[in-house]
Length: 212
Image: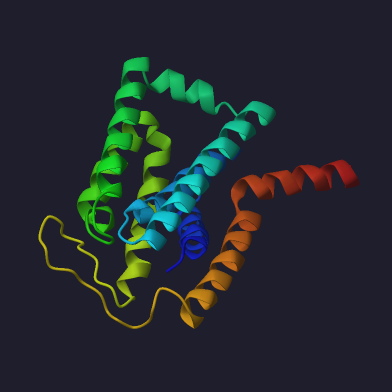
């Protein structure tokens, strides 16, 4: 499936499964899930794949920047939580390991290492080192990517380094199914956000302000 489809499906799935109860967890969870849902496709092969990988990297940086902006503007307490749980050395170690794994994965054939349970485990461990509250959201987002691509015609090496790939071959990564899933993902994410606990509390505050 294409990047936008992975983004919406992965983020919606993580928020629906993990049910964030506060605004900081909602923001960091959504950001981690979005990155997890996209990061697999940084692996490259053809020139088109290189361009797609660049888009994925740009989208990942944008998600991280938006999370930082939300923390700065809304003072959500994400930075305090991050620094209270992690030393500088731990943050640097986790970030460096995450980037090194991605750098390695970027040079591998498409749907090999970066589409495997090994990459899921290693990258989730890195996120857990950096920010434990976000690791489960990242993992669900990443796993959603593997599940969606499993329905395509190009095999995934889920059990890398074992060379055998797996897929169901139901549809291509582009086309009607991808567009249908994109629409479902967009609607699902909107519904999950509206029905989330932080949104419910915000609505309650607005109603109290209106009706006293």
